[in-house]
Image (cartoon, rainbow, N blue to C red; front, top):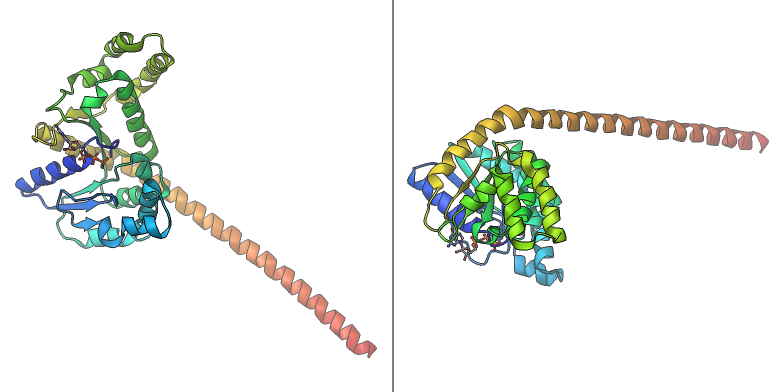
Length: 297
Ligand SMILES: Nc1nc2c(ncn2[C@@H]2O[C@H](COP(=O)(O)OP(=O)(O)OP(=O)(O)O)[C@@H](O)[C@H]2O)c(=O)[nH]1
């Protein structure tokens, strides 16, 4: 996941080719219905089943509305995708590219359904792709980090922050801001020390300090391949964390959901029984009235 234009698709393409060169068994999925030309070989492509342009025309939708609708349609079939993935032998990596407009996936019902379906079946982690060129501005850096933290706390899955495009802008400045609070404060002083935004970002930096602790982050270039050798150990670490920390939590959550579902069903059955006894009472009254009427005639 990542903000529009951060380089998600280019990153997926590079990761796919790096894994293929290592002779890994990779399965790739494109979930961006609005992509014009797919630049990586996708085993499964949302565009094969959903025609984004047609959706816009038929339902008079704007670009984002059509992405959300396409994802909704796809989400209804996602359990079949999970069955398909489970039936494949020997898959080591499943890489998924998400739509350009991040909120259409990260804050939509369909995005949650897809993420939950994946994470309850496979060790799952989020790779959050950041555009290093834009993020060298401390305000843009803060919006990116807020987004990354909201994804982390919402999904409760391991997350790796990848500063992309390091061939144009090294990631060190941003990565240093995460470990050295003072250096981030100084960068804000440099651009807009008394603005509301700078003050807000100072407070947010304090809040995010805990999020930054132990957060795996690294710089890569999806064009040149720089840094990808450091990505794989991070992905393995995320997998281990998923199994030891996140999976037990997911299972607890699943148990609570299941218990609630059973409780709801019991409630419904009780309600049905009550309705039934009301009907019985009514029928018996009706029969008495009928009998009285018969007697009087
Ligand atoms: N120099 C450089 N350019 C990159 C890199 N990664 C991506 N780009 C460029 O950034 C632009 C956007 O890349 P995409 O991969 O389409 O980004 P995206 O996040 O998938 O875009 P949307 O899905 O449209 O939001 C393209 O012009 C890419 O060539 C990189 O590591 N270095």
